[in-house]
Image (cartoon, rainbow, N blue to C red; front, top):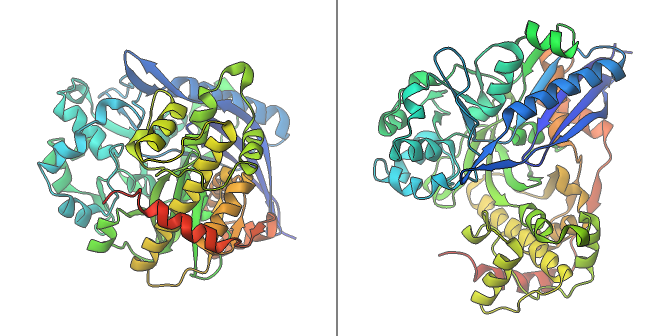
Amino acid sequence: MTHPSSHLAFDLGAESGRVMLGRLQNGRLEVREISRFPNGMLTILGHRHWNVFRLFENMKDSLRICVREAGAAPQSIGVDTWGVDFALLAKDGSIIGLPYAYRDRRTEGAMESFFRKMSPERIYELVGIQFLPLNTLFQLESMVRDLSPLLHVAEHLLFIPDLFHYMLTGIMKTEFTFATTSQLFNPLKMDWEDEIFAALGISKKIMQQVILPGTVLGPLNEETRHESGFPNVPVVAVATHDTGSAVAAAPGEGDDWAYISSGTWSLMGVESSKPILTEQARSANFTNEGGIGGAFRVLKNITGLWIVQQCRHAMPADQRKSYDELTATASGAPPFAALLDPDSPKFLNPLDMTAAIRDYCRGTGQRVPETEGELIRCILESIALKYRFVLEQLRQIHPHPINRIHIIGGGTKNRLLCQFTADATGLPVLAGPAEATSIGNLLVQAMAMSQINSLTELRAVVRQSFALDRYVPQNSEAWDRAFGRFLELQPI
């Protein structure tokens, strides 16, 4: 029998922060939630920001709860967050304002602005990242274009997990999986790309040294220990991009599977031993993000349950149904009454998501969904059809067959979407674990503490520890016809 090890994971998402305590013994991981707290974008003077100071207070509160409830201190702490966003720090290490949120309107037109400095083909050749207006590169370009005074006083750029590492330990580093999301990092050179920074007109000196996932950063600083009552344990740089942690915990075997990390966003892709930087991958807008053990996550961002979340938000508070109730209403609605492209710019951040969907359906000559069930079914069917669209693109650029799909993350709780995914793609779907991000975070900490020796062993622990739900494809002819209609909605 091996001695147990315990670890504490901070998994910070766009809607909430989750703090999970994991106990690993004899190849099995037990996980329990220590605390959960809300997160969300703040709108201040027309711009969207993250209240990182409130989040840090929540994190310290969670450390206090862990000390009080766990009985014994964990051996390490790890932090993962959503991607691309960053904070700027002055020369003295002080934080310059609240970080902007990736959905802020300041990036409008920034991609086109930067393309006048460097072609998309050259950018992709250097960094291999899909083009999204929210990427760090275009956030910085918007600041250069708009002559932001913050750039004149910024000495350091810290991505969001880097910032929390800094507040916990006083150490400034950037972890590999997060660096690769920024569109500033060359994965072949394993360094920040000089040509990109030269085109931006920003010094590369503001960036930090890049370290690999599983690196021990250092101990909690004295201030944090004093305020939280937490002992002097190390902070580990896990796969700090939440999708990196989630995919690490995907319980796949072999090389014939794809994954979908399903939540606010859906991240669909495969693992590869090296980046895929072909013209076909660029034209299909695939991204090459870092993974564990030198692997790369070749994937595409798909707008996921964000659309459902925003439809629910638009409902009157006294009439707002739970997500389970909304899904139940969708299951009884007529199939394929209307479809939409989840990645249409119309759904990025509208004032009223319900109105945006109805306007989209009206504008594309489809029946307009009126009831809650019709709206939610339209969204879920469309997300599943987008998965099929991306699957067919993956098969064109990836050398291995894809025979099954692993869905991980919070979206595994939506059983209707999981079934629709199997139906739309014609592949068996294995769903789980729901808390894959926290689990990956915890198990990479265990790797750093020499409790696990490889990614293969890590995934074996996941399979031994968590039950998976299996979904078998149904109604293939109806989904084939719907896919033909869906293709007509895709931009040329």
